[in-house]
Length: 325
Image (cartoon, rainbow, N blue to C red; front, side, top):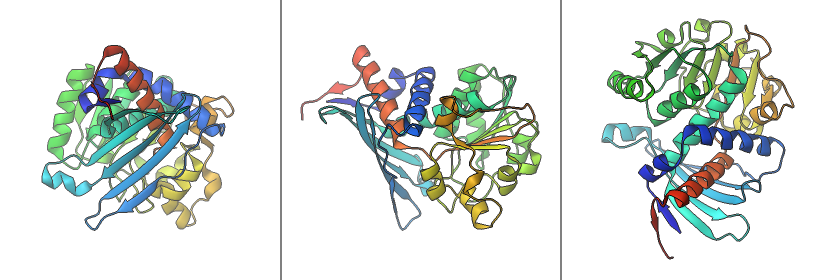
């Protein structure tokens, strides 16, 4: 079995390849060909959550389980908000193939998910991106968006301005893009063509009234019914709401469950799963003036296909350490 550190995962996989794998996985999922039980959350007394996420992809011939912990209070301890482990097994024999850092897998596949949706739903000429949340997820949101659209400007906002400034410096150097720190979420989204939210906020991080016609919004952060980083006005203004999984989003995503609970929308407001759009079963953007919204809570199938891709590339490049159980 191969053991892969975070550095090994990042060295093995590039965002373009992960986007391709995730797009195929979404099609597989929406066609009903994969096995993806709802994840099991366990809350802790200090507000942390640990999620147990199994999945099986016949298409990639692999299965995996991810154990991911999200502890917002870790920021005060100088620790990462997200920590995780992925165990990858052969889908034919069940033999464990690899164990790898799950936080990096999560960041890659979450960014790639928004990359797929942006490619399918954002305007072809979209060039200004707003990133809200400057953590590891925010980094891969930008990397993925930059893979599918030619960006000329990026704004970033984070409740921790120092973290936003670090993000701007690092991502500007990495991508060659102009990355500007915004003072508020509203300032970040003003005039933006693409908005990506990746926070642990329980309250909306920008006003939907500030969105220009034709904007595409990715909501990658809120993953419980009590969390809501995207407000009701954004949801109501969206001409199309796409999701990664109807079942998962309608069980977990406060961004939609809050307006549903207020009677502002019902479940029929969900236009499509992104896999249906990727497969061509439903159209994506149909007008330059549509505001579109992609809400994803993260399905385990994406961890399976990302981990399988990382494992295969790591094998080719002899990354990590082989151990005998």
